[in-house]
Image (cartoon, rainbow, N blue to C red; front, side, top):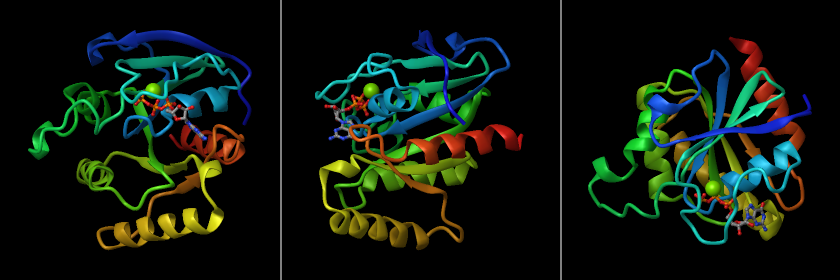
Length: 198
Ligand SMILES: Nc1nc2c(ncn2[C@@H]2O[C@H](COP(=O)(O)OP(=O)(O)OP(=O)(O)O)[C@@H](O)[C@H]2O)c(=O)[nH]1
Ligand SMILES: [Mg+2]
């Protein structure tokens, strides 16, 4: 699958403001600065579509981008930066949990994980919540250009084995570099499959 047209549709402060149509959302979540907005730009081939910044916490709203007039790519705010509450309840903002757990448009979620890091508690907790709530998701390891294949594979293997302690079947896992265009075809093929399935 390719993308011919990507158009910014709207930014929402709460889920009551998301587009009121039947088109489905493919959304991107993960820690602040993991590369969600950059990945959306890489997939659409438009470097200025979603706002990117070296400072974490750039994306603050739910941003819908209409793709080929038929589905949405959704850029979400990151977790793990502004809210540092130690209680698990405050770990993820209401905007994120409302959207991910309650928004009917949300068809499939990609959880982005920084391939430079060993498994992080906050990512594992987020994934645990998705499992508990039965949300369909896949994982994308980002910033593959920033480290050697050996180091990256070590982190990915560690992540897989950590998840395997809880999960019988592991989710789809893909690799990306927005800088080098790595993973574009695989991610778009997976999205096409998700949109075909139901
Ligand atoms: N080298 C490299 N840098 C990347 C890649 N993806 C993102 N970055 C950089 O990482 C920083 C954060 O990227 P964003 O796309 O803004 O990250 P985000 O997850 O949307 O961040 P928030 O909106 O703050 O949650 C920017 O400086 C990007 O240029 C990548 O694949 N490779
Ligand atoms: Mg962003």
